[in-house]
Length: 155
Image 1 (cartoon, rainbow, N blue to C red):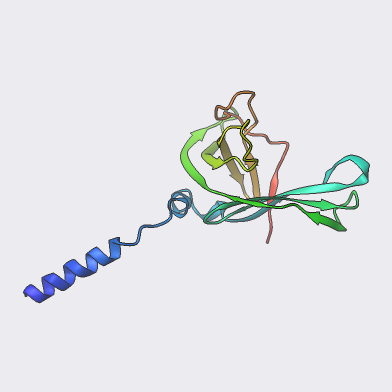
Image 2 (cartoon, rainbow, N blue to C red):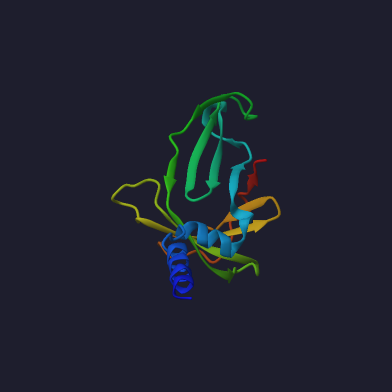
């Protein structure tokens, strides 16, 4: 009997020895809807070129921009130097529009000394579309969604 209790204690201790990544824990709480790659539609920039913003969620948050030599985002000309940043999903909240969104905090990808180190934002998923909060002039968390800029799930 003593050996059985010792073995049981050992197994329970060993199972708790490996802590889960907090980002994965947060995704589990929110559901797996956020996981994967998301891109904006083709966005026109100066000189007849265009871009797509790319965001990928996994155990980290990957932010990148794809550049295209045409207005239709057919001929890719460059891929930005993407950056992996840590993120954390927080509590659910109701936006000014009455939508149920989720808090999201992530490291500032610019990394300069003039910007805040952490971005406080919100994220809203509607089917295969992902939206972020409307930027505020201060560094506080937005309370409304920027519905004019959608990110589409990449299959």
